[in-house]
Image 1 (cartoon, rainbow, N blue to C red):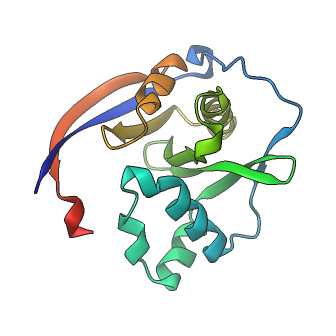
Image 2 (cartoon, rainbow, N blue to C red; image 1 turned 180 degrees about the horizontal axis):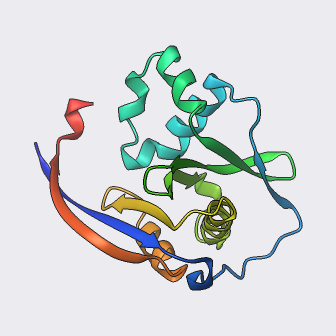
Length: 170
């Protein structure tokens, strides 16, 4: 059975437009993963995204995963040694932009402001690469706070669309 899904495309055009998260913790650290272990990334993608129909990549071969992971910057958020979440940045040199392709945290960290902290970091790191804009998209399958978080950080919706999705196809 098809479900009607709303998809939202957002962007921010300048670091000056960023409304930084006010979440502060000396125990949270975000690091760029230099060793892009396929199984580690698959685990994060599957576990963080399981309630939000993050399933399209589960069909990828290891070779495809390897190529993809080598085309992005992959950041992991930890609380001391515990993994909290991740995000990935894809840089498009043709339009001088960065896309936050995926961003997510584990359930036990929901509703604490940590998603805003993680998004703030992704936007700052993107603009440090001298891009003209940072893009992200979300839909009504994602966590209900996702769109609110993006707008709260100063991102603006520039496009919406309705799509039809059948979860049984995955």
